[in-house]
Amino acid sequence: MAIALSLSACGGGGESGDGDTAAPGGSAGGLEKTQLLVGVVPVPSSAPLFIAEKRGFFKEEGLTVKTEIIQAPQAVMPKILNGSMDAFLTSYVSLMAINDSGAATLKLFQHSQEAAPNVAGVVVAEGSPITSAADLKGKTIAVNVLKALGQTLTNAHLQEAGLKPDDVKYVPVQFADQISALSSGKVDAAWLVEPFLTAAKKDGATQIIDTTDGVTAGVPIDGWGVTEDWLAKNPETAAAFHRALAKAQQIAGEDRKAIDEVVPTYTQIPADAAAAMTLGTFSLEADRTNVQKLADLLHGYGYLKSKVDAAQLFAPLGG
Image 1: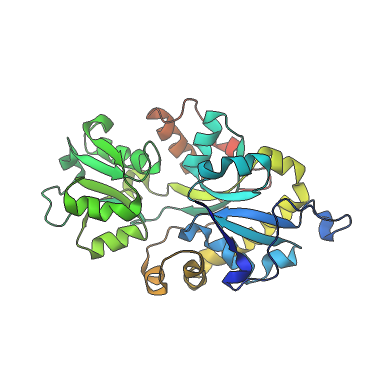
Image 2: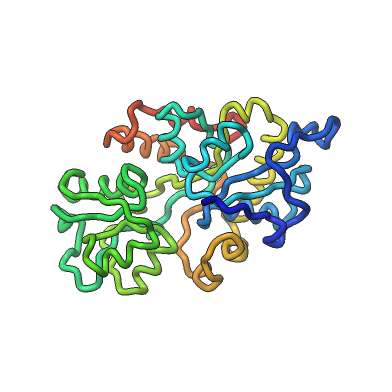
């Protein structure tokens, strides 16, 4: 179930408002809306939005932002489609899958994070005889969602090791349950992202594949999405929101401490664990060559019906 979370409760600014509220005539900058509802996933990639609130960037643009914790945009599509949720953090995979399904036409409004080494990987239980990707033939691998980022990245590394994707069996297991699934022998290996990856290794698990390095180095992870329709109806609000987010994104890319300060306010990650996590790169724009590479992998594995032109995923106001 989604949980409403007011930014003001996280040390933010003014009152949180209803995402449907339209701006009064003559509002600052001619904004179509001044109050926004944004879906945030409780992961480090959402940090720039909370940095923007903490530092008053939204207030400077005449915006009041309320957030709602989500797990993925697919879970809140009715709100996205009816306009009651204005923007949302989305993985590139989710955005492409939603567009491919025809459920909506989404645009990437602002890039958030791309992979760096050891941000995500495949681990095995302590003492496992599996020591490399080649040893995974005939084994069961846990991923949080089937036919999504974890399976796609792992497939690429399996192929590099001379295996085929169907040489292994993927099963869906929530990240929080994967360590116990490994320990009990329900799965032979698990694909994990931070902070779960660090936690698993502290618990004795061994990482055998770094799925954010090598053949999949620099893979784009996620960013802020909007519908094409929302963008057309709210161009001034979109520009203002983007300016605030971009300022915070730049800070996130330059100051790790700024991320560490806000992550515990919207996740269940303790401050010491947040500071110990391996993070990806917070750059202002995605490397579109890598976005296209990811899209081609998804289509090549049959996870997307249609080929994707990566350039068409981005809103005109920037990546």
